[in-house]
Image (cartoon, rainbow, N blue to C red; front, side):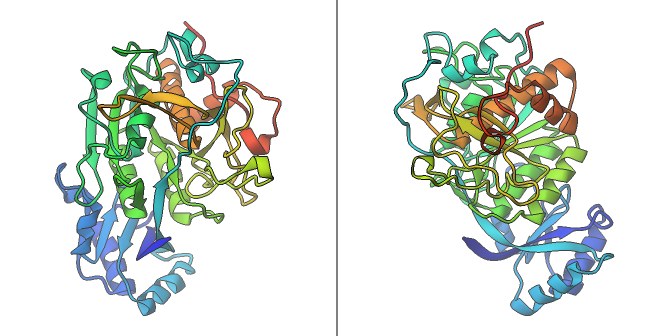
Length: 395
């Protein structure tokens, strides 16, 4: 599904130059009004305001979202074929959605107990001494219930990038993923479910309360997270598109260069029990974004978890707990148990924060640490990548 707008990737030669960007958009797309997200105040960084300007520019990412007619779009495509062009690629703006499924039946050798969820046990968080202290994790999702008692006293920076909706999570998905990535080490009720319990939380609402968003909102969240010096970005969202997006691959590469690792859900478009292995979609199929698969509590690949996509960079990179995952949920329900590669992804994001804290590594080196420390599983790499993500050993 697309929105009718276009996403343009700007070359490195112009992305730091406002006048050059404006000139490129003016000459190739006929754009006369340009809004730079960096000029907007913290309470008005809503990409939906681009409905008034003809283009909105995310300068850190070197990406713009704009309205243009078919003739202008054709001119931009021709310009992107020029090796020296200011515009590298043009793509239709997509609609993204939260990636989740329903709880399934489980007869597991690893199980939740009074102290920890099975996911924290499987990834060795239960034995880890690292907490993620000093590390910033951005969770780009449906927002966060900021009044949830389990997050009381935490360092939380929040921002909504969804038209007309506050950062409050009216869906549940974002509160759940944030809880898994960086929930409390000692929740007031029940067992521990959060991986990086002392990480700084950056909650970016890029999907609406129905669980949908656009490229513009997702890109706005990534831009905000990188500008905020977040070492890790967790994105449990995507679109079932096989082809690699030049937009997200460029953004992933530029994020790594800025010191930020992006972790994304591989997708839930498989039905393995009936022979459908699915495929890793956008943005996780980008070579510079870490694609996460889901395993159940038997450490078997989850029925819904997408297999590697044969496109360059479309492989599953790593796996994490994604079946029947217990975590926080907006009040008054407080907790919920759901499944999906969405649930696996924040496990990896939280584990990345633990590795960042203990090693000081960032970006590609942090990626390499996660890959190098993974527990090998007796499963095809096309399903689980290098294996199960694990926490650093205790000090």
